[in-house]
Image (tube, rainbow, N blue to C red; front, side, top):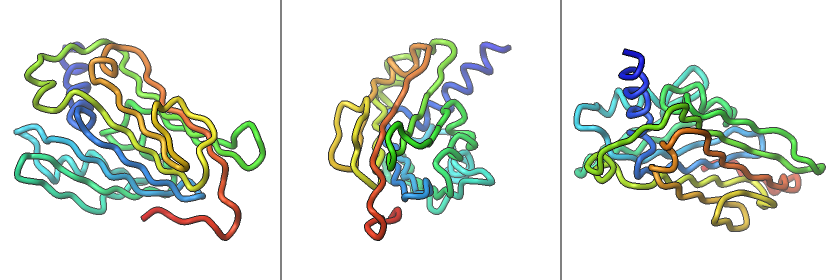
Amino acid sequence: MIASVSRALAVGMLLVCQGCLVDVRLAPTGAGVATVRYRLDERATLGAAAERLASPSVTARSAKLDANGYGTFKVQFADVQALSSTAMFKQVSITRLPGGEPGTTALTAVFDQPKALNLSPQVLQRHGNDLTVIVRVPGSVLDTNAPTRAENVATWVVPLQTLLAGGKTTFSLTYRAPAPGRAAGPS
């Protein structure tokens, strides 16, 4: 029974993370918007999927379904750490703290898959083989474990087999806050 519940929770997370895009845009305050795009399971409804991305601290602003079964969702939050309060991201712990140097901010998200989950090649192919995470910050990225970065963007592409192998996957970056008057909010 516990194994089937654990498998169901992990598959639910897969529905958002497999072959999907999670694109987060932060404001200087830590507020922001996230765009999440993934292929819905054939039994899922757009409304139910949007509800899994909402919580008292996270508001689902829009939800669209394309002809190929991909849902695109926009959510808004007053604090990026609140994303963990949604059903979809409950396996992700997010912290946003002052960085080691004055004027810097450290952002870390840890996906915890306590037990390895093996999915069939058909399931992986249907949902995609990778999770792409893009984080856009309101200042210059100084340090990150992302393999790709630009001035204010860090991008990770993680194979789903790695994400679901059991253990923790960490996404981290440190950025310098923008000078006063130069900060742009999320759009």
